[in-house]
Image (tube, rainbow, N blue to C red; front, side, top):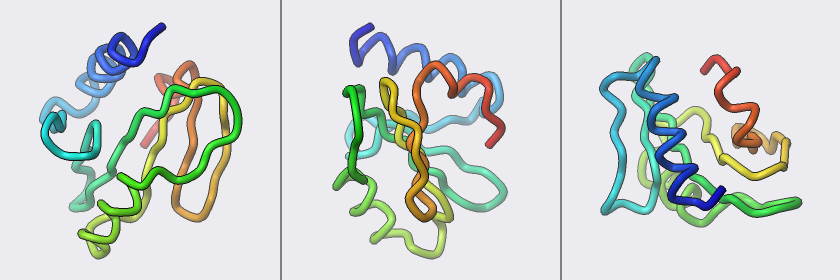
Amino acid sequence: MDRTTLLKFLEQELKKEYPTLFFSIDLEIDFILHCRGAMIPLEVKYRKGEQRIPLEIKNFTGRYPDKVNKTLIITRNYLHQEGNHYFIPYLVFPFMQL
């Protein structure tokens, strides 16, 4: 699966629960979920192995510190939590509750 296909898959999955999903084309972040008055930035980093918090996520949370309480980074196969940053393999994502 390539990144474009994965983005389309995630958009379909997210729209089931978040019909007002904001799909960011011009911003650095791939998706922004609005949930209970907060924003959840969702960035796709479809690489194998261990990963770091993406610069896009750091910049976004720096711009909106009062509105972001967690971030999601969708990965190929890396499952990890670092503070309020969650690295989620794409195969697990459809089974999560945000």
